[in-house]
Image (cartoon, rainbow, N blue to C red):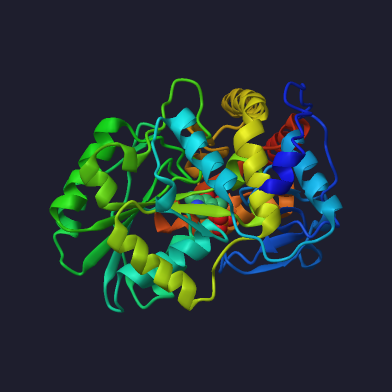
Length: 415
Ligand SMILES: Cc1ncc(COP(=O)(O)O)c(C=O)c1O
């Protein structure tokens, strides 16, 4: 963006961030801090005041962080805001360069700028991708328990869900390839949505797993949409592999959803990039975008993305170190104090899947204990599909003080 190029703000590049600070988010319209899901329909929210416990409930559900974004992003937004003119603005050459260099440098994935389609969020894009690449009556494969907006993206467009449930054994999830082979043989299955890394179970798929998944879909003419929005968020010892970069065949048979929103806590700016190397698919998707009147993204989203991808790396390093310490704290606390609950160790994402089946509670009793008795608000496992019953998803991208308070509240109630 020319305005930013003339005013490069480098402040904040080497600063030490303080992630322990608890910054008030109430009164900002925060979905996480001011709303609760209704439970029966995870996509409907109600104001917190309608729930018992009200303001004292600690929200650790929806996937955003309770940390301010990198200082260079905040500075770039202030700088752009001070210009005062916010007319129609399209992503320029520096925007595309920021995206391609980020993925080249971080994931060793070479993207041609012309493959990039900008969209105002991954969930809207998923809905439009299903609409573009299926016809009503087709089936779309997903791997439950999984991020629940996938369900409506499929059903909103007249398709039905083909579930290839993940296997859970010994505190670890894996893919069921025999079932995948069988399900994708059905010619009604046109599309498969891969979650990589997987939300909520936290797996970062290995090269072997991705190869098998990709080969089976390719062999059965199933197009893959890989949602890689959490791809930058991995823990020590795990390596994220961008699906499209694995081979030319996979590249031509896949569409990749990316965004800086999880990585840099920018969800409210609604900016994402859908990478479509196959020219024919790209044309079809752009046609759908245009038929919905979508020709670009917000100018503040563009500004934030450029600053984050070019000057946010130090913040990302520090925030992941902090979140990993939260994870260690959580594992230690749960194993010492919360009998009946087990942490399913994640390899990526800041969302942690807790196996609460040892408490022997049904799903509504579990919700009641957590929300009404302990006053902690997690995403109940069952909203990710029936396979998630007895589990809870906790968001640990928060100051450690919030995490420890939440865990202590649960400990007290379980006593
Ligand atoms: C797997 C996955 N995809 C997409 C999204 C949301 O993307 P967006 O805010 O860009 O619509 C999330 C947010 O939690 C997510 O976990």
